[in-house]
Amino acid sequence: MGDAVGQMLASAVGIALSPMPLIAVILMLATPQGRTNGPAFTGGWVVALGAVVAVVVSAGSGLSTGSAPPAWAWWLKLALGALFLLLGFEQWRGRPREGHVHAPPTWMRAIDRFTPVRAAGLGAALVVANPKNLVLAVGGAVSIATSTASGGGKAGAAALMVVIGSLCTVVPLAVSRFGGDRSSRVLGEWKAWMAAHNAAIMIVLLVVLGAKYLGDGIAGLTG
Image 1 (tube, rainbow, N blue to C red):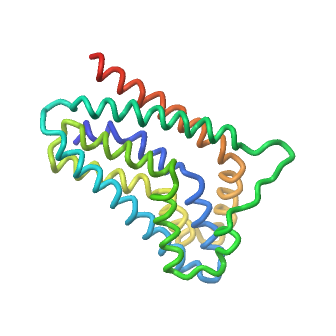
Image 2 (image 1 turned 90 degrees about the vertical axis):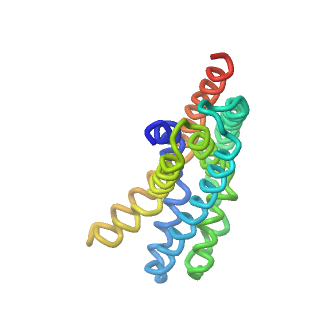
Image 3 (image 1 turned 30 degrees about the horizontal axis):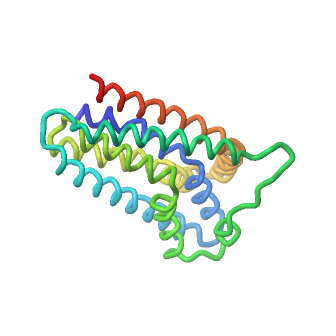
């Protein structure tokens, strides 16, 4: 299991550092329906992330029957690495310019009218319909699937990946529930910081992961 965990850890942490789901759940917790919509959003995120990881790990494990990762796994890592770098470049091109303020997404302006079903749907959509989160999830799951861990080890690593990747939605819920009078101020500070540094966080994250995956792919194909 250790090999599988080591392979997927960077991707799982990358998902956990995604600013958008953290901002979304904090905004929901500040609405009158926050006590139901916040957990519903988190549930949708966890289920969607778990489904993506489970499908990719299951499919990849079926294609990887030897003791060493197959050649296709290294080619896939090369492709994912290039995709990470491309996403990082796109994030850099779309970064906020000084003096310009981007309008918030439509769903963010309507979040106070969300039902629990819509909240759960948004949580799922931010996993499967957001290219950065989806590529991170697939990349981490592929690393688990092609590791040398046993079936049980891969299952444990997949579950751990979902847990780590869901911290961005679970931690705000915990702070809101157990943080007492300070919770609103703490969550507000987190939201403001993540919103201000969203682009920088994602650019650095995508470039670092792109370099890692490209390096892994090149090492595997030439080793």
